[in-house]
Length: 166
Image 1 (cartoon, rainbow, N blue to C red):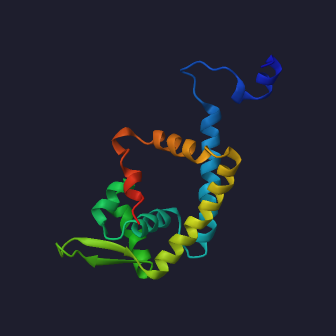
Image 2 (cartoon, one colour):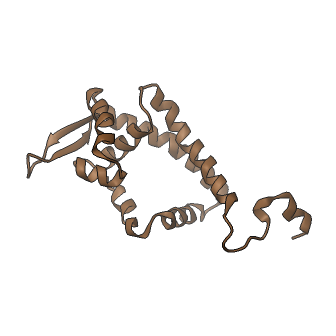
Image 3 (tube, one colour):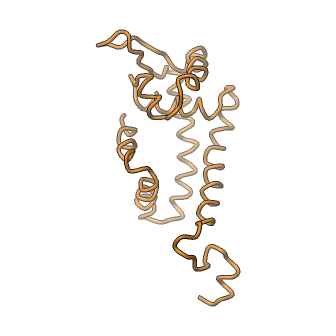
């Protein structure tokens, strides 16, 4: 590559192995901003935010998820979850039922309204993925899955498989 090309685009400059990857860090910040921004606009019309989205996503994808399991997935405190979960229950997007085997355990389920909202949010974000993956070509999705999976801490590597429950 000609030296002037590297000077024009910082992402093309050679870097030391221990140098921060500012180009990738910045791209991830902007990609995340736009990815969640699509959903944020829809959530706003319900008076919900990103925390509501995360809870609704996992509850709709994993019917019967317990509060303890949800806390572990989200890595938040009970106090943080309580307000968000209470609002989702009060607005009839999620319901908490006594467990079938242990009535003391609270199992969470998306209501029909919750399922519809979760689907609308997934469709909005799927459109952004589809546009990006189309630009990458036929092996783009496989590369994206490998990259994103590699970004997950090894001790948590099993989490996405469980998220694929239907």
